[in-house]
Length: 73
Picture 1 (cartoon, rainbow, N blue to C red):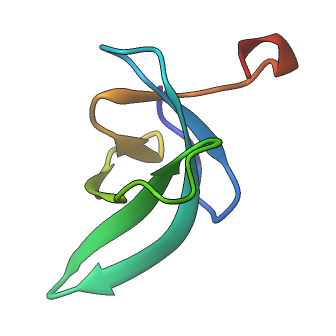
Picture 2: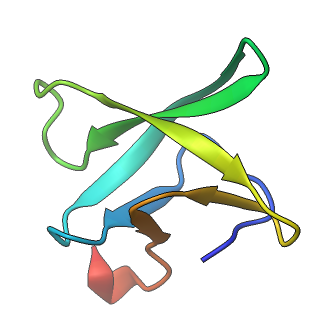
């Protein structure tokens, strides 16, 4: 699912495990945009750095989908 712009605070669901992750940082490094994700409810676990893919429809985190419903959390 493409999202217009990935922002801090958004919640994304990892497709293969179904776990929810919160975007904690978005940054650009050498012409590539990355999002840093933290597992929801697990502040002490290591963070994931995921490359943001740009499409004609918006931005995508490969392997993740935006968690849109409160029931998913």
